[in-house]
Length: 81
Image (cartoon, rainbow, N blue to C red):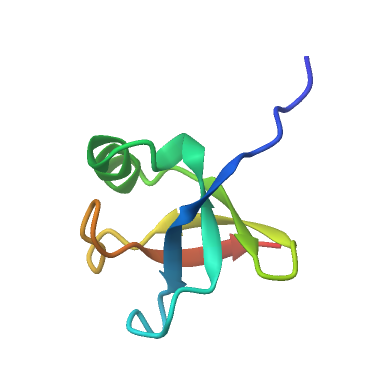
């Protein structure tokens, strides 16, 4: 059983933890952004998910729960990649 490829919504974006007010520059996996409830659950559990940068590179990240607002502002922290 292989790992499924992540899918991304063009309208769902996140920002880096070091500057949460910088314009959005990467896309967050649909697996954790299907709804505000899914985002809140991912923040609560510290769920790892794929993020795609403008150049197409993918990295594993988590939501910065202290600085994120589900459905409004998504701040992510890079873990690997």
